Image (cartoon, rainbow, N blue to C red; front, side, top):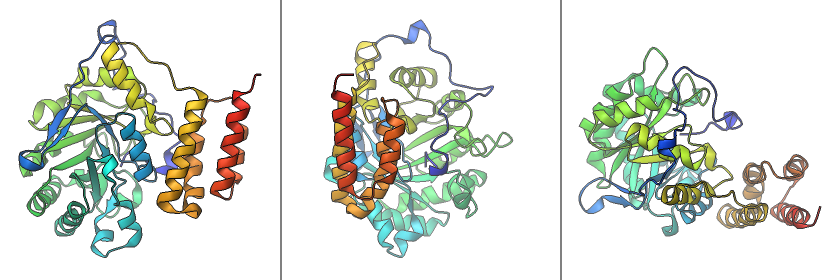
Length: 363
């Protein structure tokens, strides 16, 4: 999982001794748009470009994933899904797993620590349309790691490999892993865990360049992503500190990774994918979307969410999304107050429509 909602307002870039390298003139040029393949055989997934949406709890529901796909994202992930929840048929868990053909290919991300239960959940995910299964070994949230799940698996490489092995035995689609640099500064074992997972059958590995101890603070260590990419033969997807289009190119050139996973920079900003593809093709940073573009997509997102989750749930969950869409716009502070006090989808719709009219009027 890329995001703990309690930490979603943290700065994307902090300070650390190991960090993403600064841009250089050599990287400010065209970068060939190359996709890559995950898996082998009839169920292999061929991606048309290297851009991937990170799995973010409370963010990556179906409407949002569809918007990101429309903006050029090659691969999207579900929110992380409890293996135990699927085992017992929990309705909320099953709702998170809903997949639409408009967003395919979709990786369904599962978390758990019992190999048999995770394998059972993976089978359900395949039956319900997932193109691949991703095993969460990166979530830093205390309630997850206390159960031996998420990033806690990096402390037990043998168990991590066992989970991958059982899932591979239970499904015919590709199986991937998302992990971190390590548990803390004393256990930075991404290379070891990646190799163990590859040997167990993992078809691709995503690496977030921070430890569990860091959470989402400090700078992402791109060097560890490079070391993993050099140590395994399967595709590696780099993650961490990609906040603008040129960062994606620099990450790929620095690490040799096949794909780039974008998380918090995409919140309220699905254009990060189309703008990054444009940058790769031209070597020039494209303009940011206008206020009108942002608010029109925000309104569409609101309607999609209401249709998918019902107006009561959508009116609550869309508040954070709408706040992200309006970041930096004139009068956004006051508008956030209006959004947070809205009690229905209709009141949110009216508020955004009025705000759009106000921003479009001459100053």
